Image (cartoon, rainbow, N blue to C red):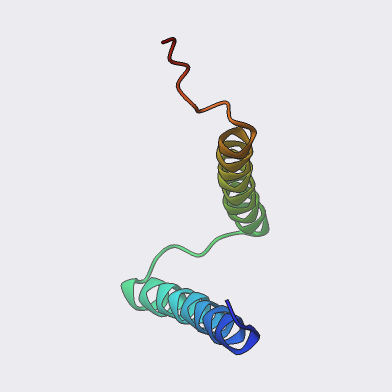
Length: 77
């Protein structure tokens, strides 16, 4: 992928993530959800961060396994 195209894709993904966060906060305030305490925000951040880390780790394992040939089917002639 060329550098300008990569920059465009990364920029679009960052903009999409920002829009999603803005929409989440907008809907959260309209619905009148109960306010979170400091402990609630910490738990929410840890849960989201650990979930993202777990997803990233599992994706890395899948790519690593595929590139090492562990996913190939051994067929005997």
